[in-house]
Length: 389
Ligand SMILES: Cc1cc2nc3c(=O)[nH]c(=O)nc-3n(C[C@H](O)[C@H](O)[C@H](O)COP(=O)(O)OP(=O)(O)OC[C@H]3O[C@@H](n4cnc5c(N)ncnc54)[C@H](O)[C@@H]3O)c2cc1C
Ligand SMILES: NC(=O)C1=CN([C@@H]2O[C@H](COP(=O)(O)OP(=O)(O)OC[C@H]3O[C@@H](n4cnc5c(N)ncnc54)[C@H](OP(=O)(O)O)[C@@H]3O)[C@@H](O)[C@H]2O)C=CC1
Ligand SMILES: O=C(O)C(=O)Cc1c[nH]c2ccccc12
Image (cartoon, rainbow, N blue to C red; front, side, top):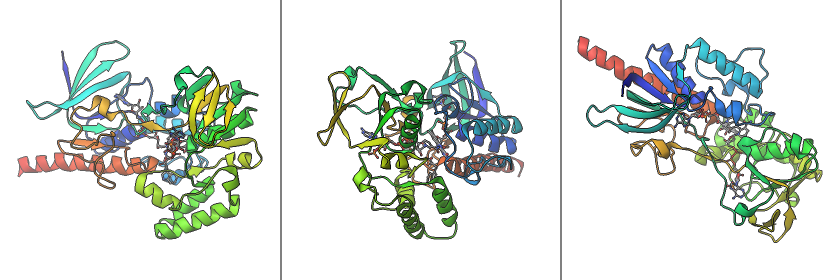
C-alpha cells in the first residue's frame, strides 16, 4: 500500500484542527487535516440544535489571525459561525481530506515517525499516512455520553442524546424529560417549552447560572481582577437577577464559577430563558433518576415518579482518543484527556500535540493552535539552522 508522507498530520476538522492548520499555513509548514465526516465543523453543522449561538462574546471566540467580520452580532449564531469557518478555510487555503477516519496512530519504530491507518469512508479503501508531527484535534466532545440507568434498555418512549436534538417541533403537548442542566440541557429544556412540550429537567448537582452578558462582563473583568473578586461579582449579579432558586430545585456551588472552570473545566450554565420558565412552573425540576419502570415511567431519587413520552440525554460527552491513538501515554491519560495540566497540556514527546483539550472553549483552541504551530516551526527552523551553520 502506498504511504502518504506529510510533515504534519492533524486529526479532526473542527475549530481546533482548522485553527492549527491555519497557523501552520501562515508559517508555510505543509500539513493535512483528516476528517471522518464529509464536512468541516460537523459538531456545529450536524450535531447541534437549531437555536444554538456562541455563548461567549465574539472577541473570545475567533480563531487566530482572522477576526469575525465587524457586522457579525456579538453572540454569533450557529449559521454565521459556520460561514466564518468556511471563509477561514478558504482564506488560509487549508487542505482537508474528508471521509477519512483515523483508525489507529502509533510510532513506527523503524523511523520514529507517526504512522496512521485511515479508512476512506467514501471509497472503503485503507490508507497509510506518515508524519513527523501528529496533532490530535479530535475534540473533547467526540463521543456522546449516556449514563447507565437501571431500566433504560426497556424504556418504551423515544430517547436520544442531545446531539440529535434539533428543535421541539415534534414534541408539542408531549411529556419530555431533559437529563442534565449544563448548557445543552438548560437550553434544550427552554426550547422544548417554547415549542409547547410539557417539559421537565433533571438537576442532580449544584449549578451556577448567569446570563451571557454577565459571563461576558466576567471575562472582561478577568483581564484586570483576580478570579475570586470576579467570582464574587458574578454570584452577586446572579443573585440579584434570579434570587434564591432553592425552592425550585437549584442551588449554587460554594466555589465560584470561574474558579470551578479553571480548576476542572466545569462550565457555568448560561441561561437563555429556562430559569424564568422554571419560576413560572413551565419547566419542572426533578432530582437524579433512580430507575426507569413500566414502559415510560421514570422514578427519581426522592421517590417521585412520572410518565414521559421522550427523554433527552444532555449528559455530556467523552473524547475518543484512546480508541484510535495507540501510543497515547506520553500525552494522554486513561480518560483520553491530556496528562499535563493547562498551560502545558498541548505538547507531548515524539512530536505529538493536543489542540482543543483544555476545556477552555474556542479561546483555549486559539491558544493551542498558535503554541503548536510556533513549536513545530521552531523545531524545523532550528534543524535548518544546524545544517546551514
Ligand atoms: C453544542 C456546543 C456549543 C458550544 N459553544 C461554545 C461557545 O459558544 N464558545 C466556546 O468557546 N466553546 C463552545 N463549545 C465548546 C467548543 O468550543 C466546541 O466544542 C468546539 O467545536 C470544539 O472544537 P474541536 O475542534 O476541539 O472539536 P470538534 O468540533 O468536536 O471537532 C473534532 C473533529 O474531529 C473529528 N474526528 C474525531 N475523531 C476522528 C477520527 N478518529 N478520525 C478523523 N476525524 C475524527 C470529528 O468528526 C470532528 O469534526 C461548544 C460545544 C458544544 C458541544
Ligand atoms: N451555546 C454554547 O456555547 C453551548 C456550549 N456548550 C458547551 O458544550 C460542552 C458540553 O455541554 P453539555 O452538553 O451541556 O454537557 P456537560 O458535560 O456540560 O453537562 C452534562 C450535564 O449532565 C449531567 N449528568 C451527567 N450524568 C447524569 C446522570 N446520570 N443523571 C443526571 N444528570 C447527569 C451533569 O451533571 P453533574 O454535574 O451532576 O455530572 C451535567 O449537568 C460544554 O463545554 C458546554 O459549555 C453546550 C451547549 C451550548
Ligand atoms: O462553552 C464552553 O464549554 C466553553 O468552554 C466556553 C467557555 C470558556 N470559558 C468560559 C467561561 C464561562 C462560560 C463558558 C466558557
